[in-house]
Image (cartoon, rainbow, N blue to C red; front, side, top):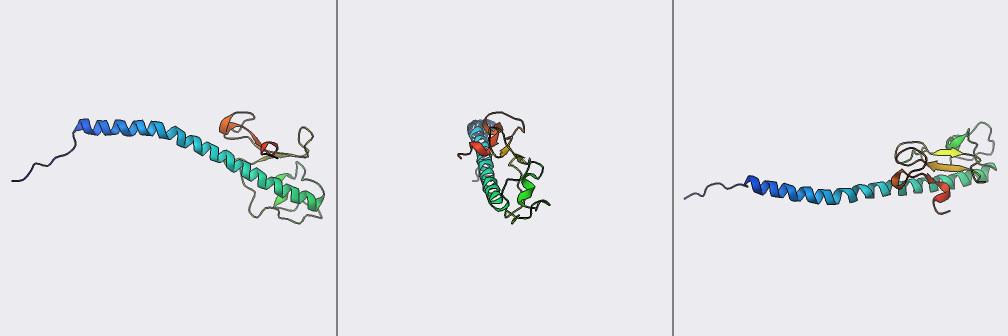
Length: 141
């Protein structure tokens, strides 16, 4: 005697789908929050590396690149810099984790020699969380 083939009932499938949905609604926000935190950490690490490259540039040349020269001076010799001994970065100039170029200005505000920052996820000044600005001066220097 053969047993009839058994499958899942519609009710059992719906219960499983509800359970999976509840789990996903609990886990997904925490997962995406961690992604945002990792992008901010990557930004801070890249800014720190650029800061070190700028310090080496200053030691060689005697000053930081001008705003017009920008961070490009770390990978390409500016025409007016005879003492340039770069490139000061081992790879090409990176964009921030959101795909935009870092902002650089020399001299910087508040009596800093330069300003180096990313505008965060939203690309606008200010913000909070992963949309907050990340500056060389708030990375623990």
